[in-house]
Length: 305
Image (cartoon, rainbow, N blue to C red; front, side):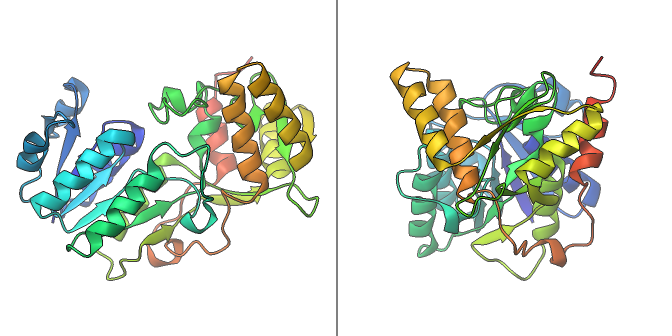
């Protein structure tokens, strides 16, 4: 099987890493710019122009599966090129909550819904797709936030402390669900998302959605893990749907778009967007993902006073 990985962020790196480690599939990486650190590993990096269909189709010739880590127009162009190049299966850059929890007019949508609609149209022409829903990425809680992992930089909430808890300043925002309990969250490390994707390539099951996670807990317990790592209690602000709507109104009135995105993330968390009970891929693969508390301790080691 030949795999094309679109993008060169941390998630793309881990997909390539596990493909190399497994050694059963050939792969290439598609990038807008040269990546000397990746080519130094012996990986084939092909420079592409996502706006040039001919260029994309040429470079996807003979590819069986595309794993995308690019969003927006680039992903839409990639889907069209993959279909025209005869790609059998497309894995879109939709690594978040389950599709069943997505609401129409989602303010956090960065083109994912349009991509899924296009992929559904492509199914009748022979190109299948599978979404890997992973909840919230651990990297939201690493030093420097998701931005430091080159993930979600256009999302408006990729900085350290933008979601749920600021470990450095020891402040947290805890959303509650409609029943008055701290919202549940499924969370996964980008490294394990890459491992899950590679492990699933040879499975006979090919659903439209695989759900994966490294851990599952409520928002209060997640903050408690951070508190234990720091050895101190954090400032905790508790929010229900009404208080979050008030914060959103204030953010909009002050034209603070970054704050509005942060509040939308908390609202979505309170609505259960990033949680699922049935992680249907976990039981089908032969590895154990890293637990959140273990990951957090490793990435913050030596980074705090």
